Image (cartoon, rainbow, N blue to C red; front, side, top):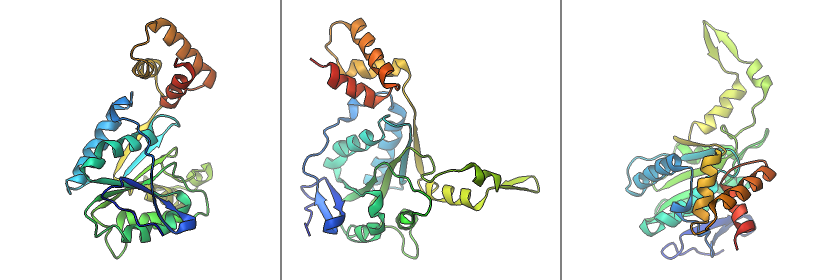
Length: 252
């Protein structure tokens, strides 16, 4: 099993077949300032991360919302911005969350501050991996370590599937709404993320602002915007991912 040198390694990934961590050799170089249209989310995430690095009270974070709107890119940019100040990151796939307590056990005595990154997190009916995640988020008999936080991205606000039948089982008692047990279970996991940041598809103005940031020296803005709008229309969505795809399509 590989031993990660956290002094020189900013991030690692859990590999199931190795039952251990592998240092990430090629980090995505996405830059904090290159992310457009999500200033509110950037400000909130940066403030929470700086408190975490300063050993002050901070929250686990859930970034949820529409696909391609910059959730994962923001986490990558966060690492690039803060790893010189001691931030380290470990990516854990949803299917490997059962190993999360063991991963965290090996981190609690280290001097670095660790973010466990779970990308595209959601659970289907019958999956039990969320139980291990719950224990790391809020602890059980043993408190979670002070130097570990969980940052997750998801297209689902509550991380678990929501069915109309669950709402039909809710009851009114004494004028108060009492959610069904299934709804309580859905909410109980998401509620453990003290900071929840929402992401939505871009308006056309924000989309074109992102395009301008990717093409700072392109001389014909009118043509650039016309082609960018045509490209987004063909894709059926305006977001940061579409802007990046247009850049790779149109650059040069």
